[in-house]
Length: 331
Image (tube, rainbow, N blue to C red):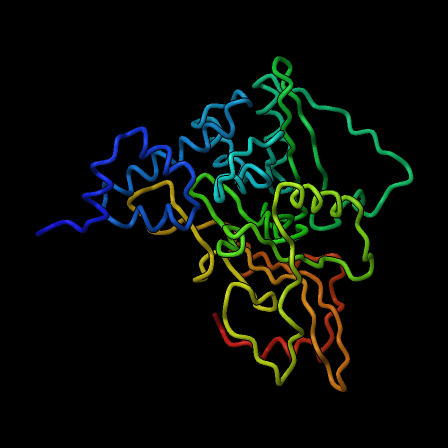
């Protein structure tokens, strides 16, 4: 059997050129590459782990130690590091962002302190703004630690939930809805992200201006990313297609839109517990053409039967709004 031209062409490339090309492939291309043949999957895993090592080497945490932290505390890495991993631009992020469940924060910080990280006192600046209120956007607290020798900075974002993903899905846009777990790399909006585009996420209609979120958005705009509004209002008559760009649809990590690259080459996907589903902030058209905003809503399932809802203003979804959401067909 004659191998396809792509395989023969790739095998003829010098190793240095292979590495250079691969280190700028986005996550969906890495996944497609790994599916060509088992040896390609092994090479993809090797290069992606190398990319993660380069992005985190300044923090004095070897890759094995980093994955150990994520595994033992059920934490994830998100923010600029995860974005650069799934959509390489050549940027080296200034800090490392861990997201952890509320019950794991003390143990995670204690482990980092054993690696010569020192807590940085968080002195509140008065008057407090809405971003600093505990529980807002599913963030219980943010702890900052700095390495005593190198000065490298780590942020530990503590979730209000048993799921570390709740603050990620409450972020300012889909640009930062990527993360690294102990089991794999995830990009929840890969098509948008790899085109350097993010959809704005409305998490609070009571507080329309959130200063810290605006600063975060401006940071990514300066890096060449763009932000757009989501799809138009959903109504009982305006049906939305099942696609990645529909912000009205309830999403989960095992749906067909999420890009996942497992760290185990013998697996096609990487699960994450607890099961976390989300729906972005969106607009709905009620009767007589009235348009209302529905805030981000996150559902976390624990122990198989217990379900917790997370959001800034729970209980504000009316029966009319619920009826419109029920018109969506499953993904």
